[in-house]
Every structure is written in structure tokens, then in C-alpha cells.
Image (cartoon, rainbow, N blue to C red; front, side):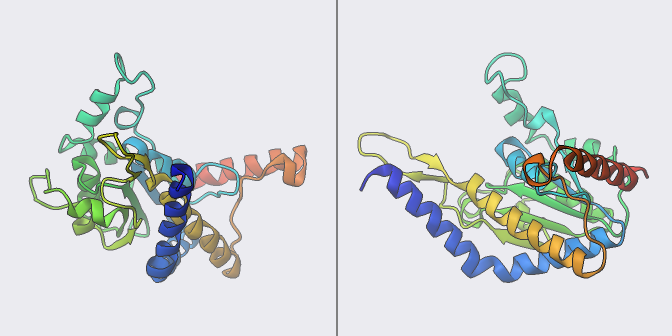
Length: 253
């Protein structure tokens, strides 16, 4: 089979596994987030490295809405230079520094109605584990989107010996293969074709659309970022301004 087709089939299989095994948990999380947002809370969203892509998929982008607070910590996810200043090795080092998450969280005023959503395919980065520990110490629930197979393949580097799925109150499994990369090629030593970004995006949007539905049913339809291709330029500008105002209101604590 052509490896491109094989990758496509594996991606479809992962999505089918998510639907078959994680739908009940996704519904539970959607209810949690809808209740949080309806009660003027914030869903704080964090991931380091490429898990940052899951954060950005949640908010802000077209079809997303106020109520989510993306924590995009550039020091653990911005490595556009790959080598040199702001390089990959620095980010990979920092995402495993215990205590760093506490310094991040101290910038925010976390309230009892809030929730934390944490992404990590490996479930083994010290900062994301610490983020969960710190959030729970503040008395708020923690949801993890993580690769359970990946987490099970390595021992914890954290001093507590915990992994992200140990810390979280609710775990959504991305169902990705161990090591994330999906394709083995004859003559090539290492597998290629990571699949976790697709899995994260599917899960995020399953949650997002359900939360929007639940909020609307509660009589609190969310402020949505809408494209000019959908509603025209002027209304799109108004939708953006509405989301900005609502985000400022929610984060002005």
C-alpha cells in the first residue's frame, strides 16, 4: 500500500477509535466547560511544544468563542529558529523544569468556577504535570487530552513520579500509536508521520461544538469569531469586536 494512503487510513482509524471509546468522556468534559463558561468562569488551556497547536485550535480562531483562555507560553513552544536563539533544545529543556508552571500560573487569578485543559501527547513533561498539580492545589478541576499509550511507554521524570493522566480529574485519550509517528518505511530506521495533531484537533472541535450547543440551550449563546466569507465584512468585524470585549470582560479579574 502507498504510505500516504496508509497514513490516511491510520488517521481515520484513530478518529474512529476516539468516537468509539472517548465520546462519553468528551460529553462529560463538554458539560463541565459549558457550566464553567455559563457561570462566568474560564477554561484555561495549556500545552507545550507541538501540543500548543491544540491550544490554538481551541481559541482564538474562526468558529471558536470566548470563555477559553489560551496560555501560550512562548518559552516552551516557540522554536521557530530550530537552532540558535529561541531554539528547539531550549524549549525542550524548559518544558521539563519543575517549578516553572508555578511561575506561569501566578500571572493569573484563578477562580473556583474555572477549569484547566492540558495537552500532552507523552503526558510526561514536567511543566504540564506541574500545571495540573498547581491547578488542583487552587481547587479547580483538570482535564487532560493525552496519549495513554505514549504515557505508558516511559517512566515519569517528575519528582512525584506522576504522569499527566495521574494528575488529571478527567482524561481524554487521543488513541494515537505509541511514539506518535504512524508509518514505518523499509530501510528507514525511525517511523514518520505524527498523528497527534489530527487527534487533538478532532477532540477539541468535538468539545467546542458541543459546548456551543449547550451554552445556546442555556440561553447564553457564545460570542463567536466569524469569517467575512460567512457573514460579510462588516458583521465579521462586529463579531470580532464582540469576542474581544467578552474576552476582556472575562479576563479582567
